[in-house]
Length: 225
Image 1: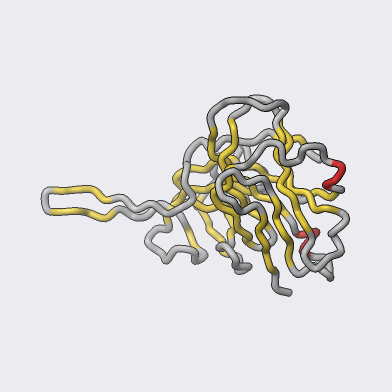
Image 2: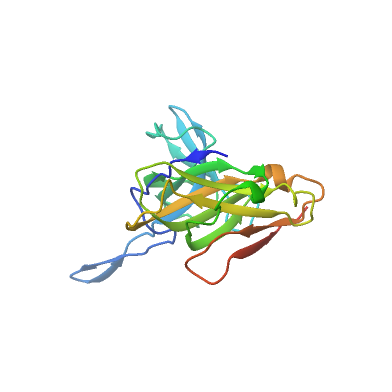
C-alpha cells in the first residue's frame, strides 16, 4: 500500500456554492456565484485549458474550458483537483467556458487490494468524515484529519476475501506514524475505483471506516451497468 502525504487545501474550505452580495447606494447588487468542485485536468495547451467533471451520482461528463494556458505546474493531466470557478452566466454544470478563481491540490490515488486481516490497526486513527460521494468511477471523500508533518498511511483497500462478491468490502485505512495530539484540517481525496467496478460480478461496494463524526461506519454504493 502507498504511504501518502496528504495535500492541505490552500485556497478553499468548502465544496458548496457561495453567493455573496454587495451594497450600493441604490440597493443590493448580486455577485455571480463561485462554485467549488473536484475536477479532472484533461488538457493544457497554449490555446486552452480544459477540465472535466461529473455531478455526484452521475456519469455524464461536463467539459469546462478556459482560454489560454493556466499555471497547473503542480497538477498533471489526468489528475484531480479542487477548482474554484465562475460560469460566466451560463447555467451551472453545463459544458462551456468558465473563469477560474483558484485551485487546491487534493489526494489522488487508486484502489489497492489486500487482506484487511493482515493490516495491523487499520482503524487506529479515526477519520472525521464530512462527506463521501461517487462521481463516474471516482470515490470522493471530504474529511477532517489531524495535521501531521510526517507521512501517513492513507488508502482505500478492497479486501481480497470479498472481491468476488456482488458488493466487495472496501476499507478506508488511516494510520499516522504515531498517535499525536494536534489540530484538525480539512482534506479532499479522490480514489479511482474503476478496476473494481469493471469486474463482471460487481454491483457496487461497501466503504468501511472508523468515523469519528457520526455513528455510521459503513456506506454502500450501487452502480448501474
